[in-house]
Length: 205
Image (cartoon, rainbow, N blue to C red; front, side, top):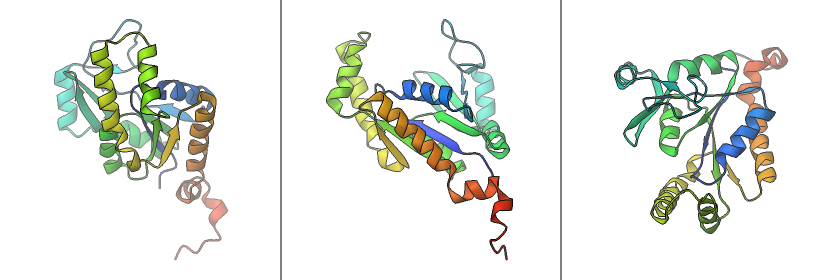
């Protein structure tokens, strides 16, 4: 029986997922952040093994053919994938692993890891999501409209997740995220695997 927990966090662009995940990683040292493989070129300031594992298309396709990914996707002509073997080893060793992926990736991961805990982060409203996207000042109206349309598509899958956090106020949303992580660790299968001696009173026959 595994002793670690696999956390899947998904959210539409602008919901505040990145900020919340960074705060969680800084506050909870038991959580390990999953590093994906990608075929895109590193951006300025990115380091191999920190943001991504950067590999060429040929190696990615070979890994995919060998069933080495728990999930993979093609986005804007580049491939992205999460190592299945690495996840299995981490969870088996007792580590809690956090994946930032979309709902499609979450479906793939849950097919292989049915005990994974899904957490979806929602904005308080579409109007607020649009305000946040526009406040960045980096995208055109056309790009923002596409992001909003994509966000609506993603948000329709919110019922597939175990926990839903509405990020209206950042500190409150972080408290909710931390509570979801802590509560997941207290589920019976996890506690039974971590502390078998405590449960010797249970009839194993």
